Image (cartoon, rainbow, N blue to C red):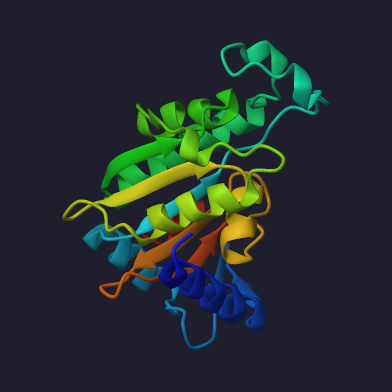
Length: 212
């Protein structure tokens, strides 16, 4: 990892962990310097403008224990997959984005089936990237790759969606994305850093629709 990237990551880690996440109506907001504090309606207006990276942890999964050594990324049967609740959450998220007018110009997914299915059900198509794949012992490498994704500005007037796992984000930013299906929103900055903006639970998007 380059020195500049390491410094940026450490600064963000300290800022976020020094600031509790205040949950309000399905949204958790950072309330300290180094974060962007927005209320619910401001958040939607900003997402409608574009320019954000939205990190989704895959939606709810079935209660199944799998052995890591037996996982085959080409065989969903060897993995823990979405439950029916998770599929409904994914469809609901996609419908909410459409109704709210939030434009998504790129969807990048971990190669795990639960992440790919989350993306396809919500947004129709996904780009699979091993840079979002988490595996034991690969923390630092994935931290550098995810950090680059969070710093990369989306295409004009749109937002980038990343769909992955809890460990990647926790190792990179100190944020533990819970529960399954939660969205953590970041704003890439002109200086090559990124700011934490908000955390939205999977049912939080429905709350936005009710207030529309």
